[in-house]
Length: 229
Image 1 (cartoon, rainbow, N blue to C red):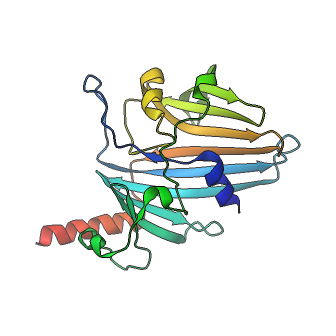
Image 2: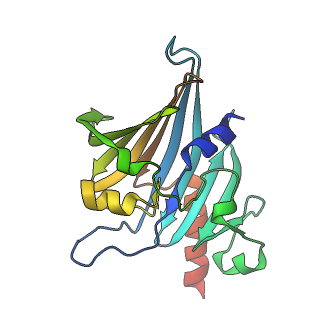
């Protein structure tokens, strides 16, 4: 129930497929990973003890190929689902012992926007962006962030932008393209406070250079098969 609510509230993650302007020298890593983590606080104005922590997704990428691991909520070391994502399609390879990228065409993929578990892929723009108000810069997890907020009668949202010229294959919103132009970075954290429900949710992207073991095994197996031909 918590997972569904998180995914509906935050409209997580859109796949960036448009090229940036040539005059800007963006850096696109060849490989790496992103952890998507959410913290939920119930009755947030009263105490911080009633809370939950969820690893929504563990994303691993090599060039344009993505392997997404969806951890079990109760036991995160176990994976409920494993997807291979290419272009705009997601292939469920959870039950395959050694998935081959060349054999994906024999599976029945789903459009990434219709995937209901793990990271939701949307092409939505950031709602009410034109109503944003700037906040002072801050330091979080030893990183400097620019910030702005959007305040509506129902929800108070705070957005954290990490200044960088490095492009990841994911962003919270399609609007990150103009966030990049205005703020010179990407949104890495969103804080959502639902006023009537007194519910506070934070969602954070944690980029990393290393692959998860499960993804590493799949990438290396496919590279081995490719080189053997």
